[in-house]
Image 1 (cartoon, chains in turn purple, brown):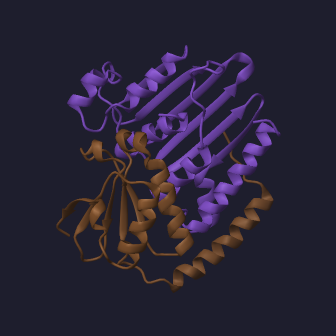
Image 2 (cartoon, rainbow over the protein chains, first blue to last red):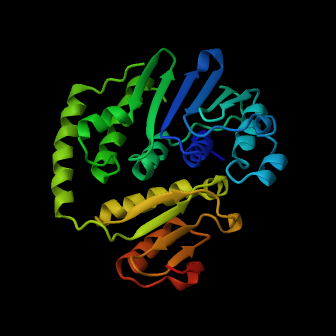
Length: 184
Length: 127
């Protein structure tokens, strides 16, 4: 995967298949501390205790289960390749949490990529059934987005409608401009 | 963690909401065509995000009533990125090894004109 957001999209697809209706995504960029952290949390069906040990082993997982494949192993590998680490916690029936840390300035770290297109496409397809809470921090500035807050205003109209997705795109664009403050 | 949407944006959102509602009232509900995009690890690695982006852009640009959904790995990883097109009352068609240009072609010829794009088909299923 050439963008970290594609790994995120991949993990979110696991959440969708696990029946989650709320996904929380946090991205914390701290270049001065050489740290990039990504947290993903869902309220899906969770993973069995005996499976979680092997979940990032591509040979074990891809053979035994359908719902969990190569995705987690690839994400883990991407983090470890550039001096980072990967953690997963899951409770059957409660949900799953994935935490990944990268060395921010490592030469092999993939860029975050096109976050806005990726997340808004996901909402355009799944927004009616799955909510997304997204928090992004860059240095000491941050923003939050919560699809449930948007839905409150929509009063029954689908969040998946093209015009609403367009609004979310612009909203996120403004948010990014604010936290990056001119520098990218 | 509390999330506040800025007031100016909120006003825009409310105006949009009313517009969308009017459009929806004019639309015929129920028998829409559907496109299903493969979004497993294999699909995403092969470019499914951009396939999905192009589909959504075409839907918007042409203002067509089309349901877009996603699915996981269907076991044809080597043919990713792939999509299924389901027209009301017709066989479900799977297209594979797709580029974003192929998507534009499929939407124009299959979804809008009802003609299957034969050279891109990898499977047909009963409706």
